[in-house]
Amino acid sequence: MSVEGHACWAAGVASVSASMTGLTLDTAGALAACREMGTTGWAAAELLLALRIGMAEGANTHREGETS
Image (cartoon, rainbow, N blue to C red; front, top):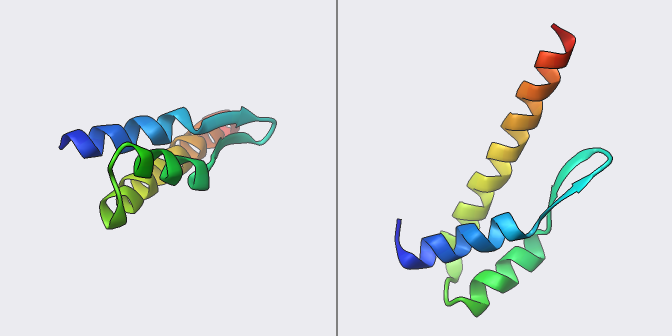
């Protein structure tokens, strides 16, 4: 992963917060942080989407574990 990719991933992880319903990703805040670090365009959007998908899959796995 490039330096820009790492910066974007770090911005995304820093924009995740815990709530009563699970984890929430402040996408707008993460994209703004990516832009400030020099990462823009589709690369930033795709990395944040991957982070969001990973969060959803983790939550789904956690929920499945509670029901079994």
